Image (cartoon, rainbow, N blue to C red; front, side, top):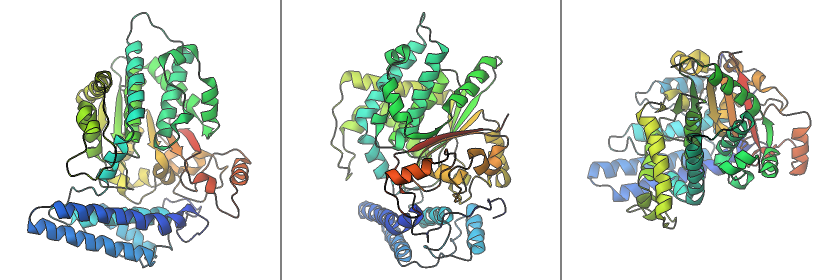
Length: 470
């Protein structure tokens, strides 16, 4: 397309890439899970029309699975009244209707989820159904121990921030900022042991250096010092009543959304921002991506944790064991709920969906195809892009040499935007690495040939910043 880089994209036909593995192994499983969800929901549905529609959706998803597994040609998406359908179909035509294993990974994967969504948007009784909703709730429910730990630490930090006579040095504030950002970075990874224990005593004493070094060795590029410098100077130079907004383009729901909200609350309490705008998706997307409903579900869970964590939802197949909570733990979660819900009700924590996030467009195209969103993000003091898909879209999912500077790989997002990518590596594309790092990691992980398997599992991360306002 017009604004795409000349560097070619990753293709689902490349057997050395995670694109091929995703199309071959992951997508059929994901569609099967969606089929199972709607099948179970249809069994419990009431009314012949809703049941009939549910069965029809099952048939449509089964057909989609067959097409993927048998490498059929992609077909135009049916019109469902949303403007993005025309964009999808124009690009499909420009790509000459590729087969599932014969086109750009980014476009085809977005097409997959948008096509699943049309089965529901064109129905009468299932329009708001999220086939991935049960999985999201189950994942968050199983994260209770870490949720309690972080909620307790957040309560301590906020309490200390507002205690009279307690003063922190700039170095201590910077360390706390780094800790909070790294928790947000690793929020969708399984190994949270990479993080230090985030107690206020550790921050004051500058302890935990050894654990931080262990975590930092897995961050292959880390621009957090520069980000803190920018935000702290903006705070220092702010005029009375001046708004300073941080935008977070969200990734996964569940525990990752929880740590995103912890970060949002922290930057507001620390006055590193006066407002935080969260950008969720508008339709069920890449299984676990945040919808507006997920945000309110999480707040509801914090408001009544006994109900959410201690009771299995009625009719649920959730196998997560029910948890027992102490009065102190309930109080800690209630404190977090009160803090976040106050920020939300008073307009400092805003959730703002936009259809652009579920188009197939890379972010190279964003400044040219969505003027309203462009203006919103350029008005922000910092736009944080969370997770792997957002990183792929920032890079246009292109086969960049891994030593390519971050600013050179994000197209026109380098102009007028402050962009921060927090990304644990779960796909091939990566930039901003020092010479020899990619080769060393390939050797350490036994990669042979052209595959970059070290970047597929979420063990490694990048934190990369571009200040397009200076």
